[in-house]
Image (cartoon, one colour):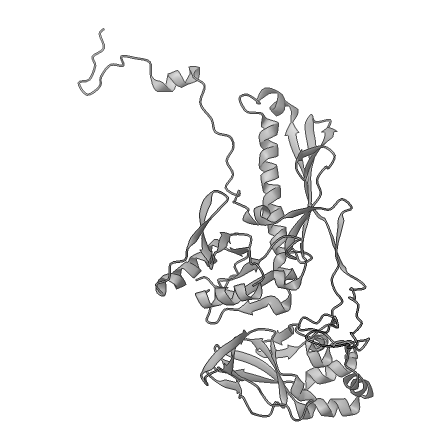
Length: 463
């Protein structure tokens, strides 16, 4: 019986592609990995070899100037200051009587301010200290020609004027106005003096708040170097010396490690045309480098976000990052600023603000690519800078290098079984299940040599 072919179906005249693929060798890519980023921070940091595992940052002797931030706790809508945090006020810096601090904390009263409401007025008696628990406040001062200008933006943890607690002649030199709904805690001079009258230890402390050796300090809190200039004739020149910190900070190298396991059958039989062990190592090291950059940004011991000096942190004036905010950030690292790092979404938010003003930032070449820049300083994306659930992030500006007293990376090269500079891959043996194990290790840290090498723009809204 003869088969008939439907008029809609044509007979196959050659070998089909599905069968032909059984005889062909496909062309394959190496394994791809979406986690890999440009890792600009690892590229821009000058890396310093730390042979002993510890890097010590020696600085001139400095005295605490009391510019820290204050932490609060809340129960529902009620906010209280943590008593020990009152030591961040310049007036109480170094005072450690827990009972007195608790008594002072109890005397604070909570106040709520609406946007536009004046918190303190220039010229009025400064008879209180105001702690900003939540919200943003503009510190306004008179300009050279009488116009009012924004001198600073204060936010969570900042405070207004503690000098008035002890100086009865003090007056506010500025006006503070809420720009968002604000919660503040207020302690009056009268309440403070009542506690001081009951505490001989506090009175004694307030009478002797000077540097331990009585030396003058400069604007940065460093012990002054006595000099003479502009004199004529035979005058007696001052004698001086440069004192150092007695207990300088030391940075220990941190570590990132993992154990890579590869079955011997996979390594033996499935390593053509690509070596399976090499590809496993390549992707593992890529993940290790990504984690290294994350730690350099977010680690509480040495991460840049946590090691920026409190005096080097500023807040956006309105929310989104504006050109004015970026100028203020660069002013914090004005000595040869080298790079700005921001989350890609924060860079997009800054671009939107520039577009709305008709400003088109220039670009510069970095690592073979054109990247946006502000005032000639490249703005590099770094997705390791966190974005909160409220859509708030931070922007970092820094100068780098030991010669510039900047930010540096710390690492250790020349490790045993070094696979890449600073990355060690050690063979750990083969288990009774025929699994090969490799220990993959890298050591790293970062150091800020002087505080003004790193600035942070906080409260950056990117929505």
